[in-house]
Image (cartoon, rainbow, N blue to C red; front, side):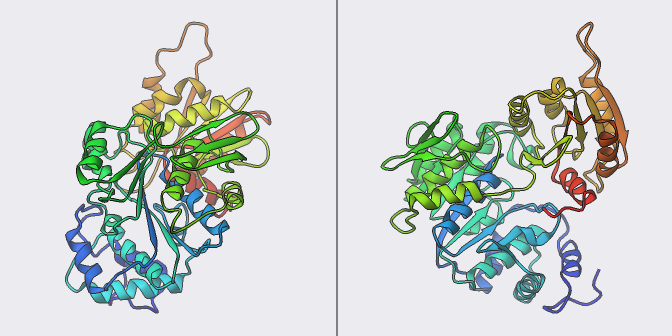
Length: 435
């Protein structure tokens, strides 16, 4: 850790190390401390503000919103988390990742303003990136919620349009152990009198009740907006706008039309302020990219990267694997954090994996490869008579697990890397790739 308080000239890695130390715990939900420092910074975003929350799908929805707005010629800031490899991935202005120097300058401003107020790593970095956007003279910002909604640092921003993509069980120690409790937490990003998009096909009643209680302009999938499609193209239908003859999004996966329709509903809801022509929609959907979301690397065997780390995301991954066509064997590089629903994820994918390579992950929340392998073996104990039993191996880390999977896989096989951002990032780095 830096001996003295860092300043604008301090290298970014030292800043990030320092930020790990300025608050007693990594997650401390609540808005009072963040608001206090935001007021001291006189933080103000004079542009159209999209806030995107949800259990799964929010990263993809953010990426498509950003791409369509950029294709329409707008100046756009995008804030997402977590990052895969470099912290800078969290902040983009006009499609360009923020530089170390730009981030360090904003960290120094937040550090000077906070005084004796303690901020978590996420709170501190959120304020810094919001200030970066505030100074960039943007037309729009797209802000991804970190955890939940009600008490997440991003919720100090009053959204002009808020989106909840999906509601399912994750982070239950912070958000509650039912969809109703979690839905209520997420619904708090909605604002009175402003568009409140929900693309979950079966939204919890708590979300609907909260949106109506505060007088939000609630847009529901299946009622206010929808999509249809065939093998060649698809179409979006909203309250007063249709988008026909659209090419399928560059982001792969069966759930991406749901995410794309949420992004298009958001754009329709603010079209008086940010009109987006049809050609910009087409170009944006084709250019949107998001590493680690059913990302298929070129070459053989096929390598699929997916950060799926809860049962809902694992079910989507399973569906996408089913749609891929025939591969003789599927090899998994599987690494998960210990506070996640490991057994729930395994249950969604178990029958599709022939060879499991279980990887240990570092840190206090990490699990060992041996522990993960024990979970897999227990879940797969009941193999049907006459079936070929899956193999299960333990490895120290994802890079070692991936090397073993590549050594075992035939040319026509596929390797699916999943379970955590850390797992995907480790494999990307082992391949010498940037996110």
